[in-house]
Image 1 (cartoon, each protein chain N blue to C red):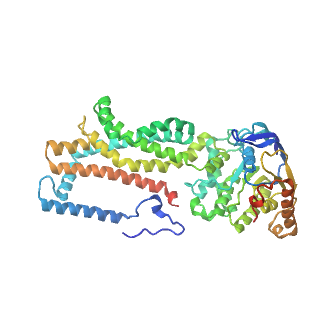
Image 2 (spheres, chains in turn cyan, blue):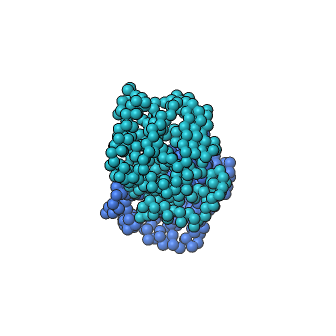
Image 3 (cartoon, rainbow over the protein chains, first blue to last red):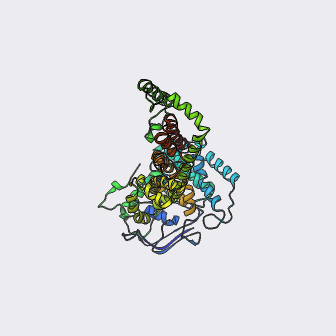
Length: 273
Length: 266
């Protein structure tokens, strides 16, 4: 699904964030990307989203080199990115309206996707119900809770039927119960739609709960990939299981070993719940 | 004045936009007080240059269907044409400057120099170049509105939060869709605020511009009645008509703004 081959990237003339970095993800896998702030987690997502481009090497998704945002990739950010002047319903419809605006041109919109008014309405209604935000559909983002905003952002993205979901710290500004219910909901949605997921987080517990595999990034430039296998079927019960607790502590240990949390800037940069 | 009740969970309310809360009734009350003070002054002073409001309003009623109506229409059309012209020129320019730091760096010195110039001093120059008729009046009022709209739209486009642009681009939006779905709706409040803020100045300068080289417009009418024909009742009727023009446009833009920008108070 995803192949990074010898990717080198730096912002303008700054130090490199990635240097000859390679990484592969198979379709249907759920990955957490874990690392301290400034390690290049978000940059990795922007590279995958086609919003920034490597100076050397290649980013491929589904066998195609990524040169611009790919219509089947969904991106969800910590700050939601909802339009403040549009109601929840209009925000959820935004991606579909953009597709109708361009038509199936193969560049902004998949060539086999024909979106019309009734189709938008059907899909929006479906996802408003599925994400449990139907009651707030006529409210503006400023009038609803953080959890509802993130639900609206997720609905807006999954309404476009993506096959790859990129999430950048999607739950980190939410309170613990909201965060946990959204984590479970996200995993359910991924299973329903057989999505490939890359979830970026600085939270060890979240990485362990969500990711079947965990990519650990350290201080840039990142050259080698450090991958931790974390096979499990995450559900609400898993959070209370001994296996989960063991996964978290072994993850913390592995991070210390790999030197990702280096001694100059100690574990303060690692947020735990 | 009683406070406007605010919905729960909405601490900013109307005051979030820096407005005094008011109701239609209290505005009517204020208008009545102003008329009463005028009436009292006129009754006490008893001079021909201050007719009573009733006399002035009576003349206004009669004149509107005759001569004054034509002048009112001429002024109204000039202002509306200027607003249309200014908004349709300044909005795309402001959006372009707001989107591109490079362009903004190039043009901001010009805006910085030209924006604060009181456009009214340019009236004689514009008249010299454009001569008689509507063109010079529309151009001068357009210039006033243009810079106000330009600056506010530019700043609103530049202040769109980057995560909105990133996420909308990730939904497949290219330049055209970003313009249509983000920049345009985001700048609408700025356009309306700019027009609302500068409508008073625009009408004032229109008055000045209509003193010269024209035989239509409220400025011409007021000046003619007051300084040449010494018909003070008609002059006052003209003054009321011009005030109503400014007020009416202000209220109209304000109403549109409240309707379109409900989300700001949300």
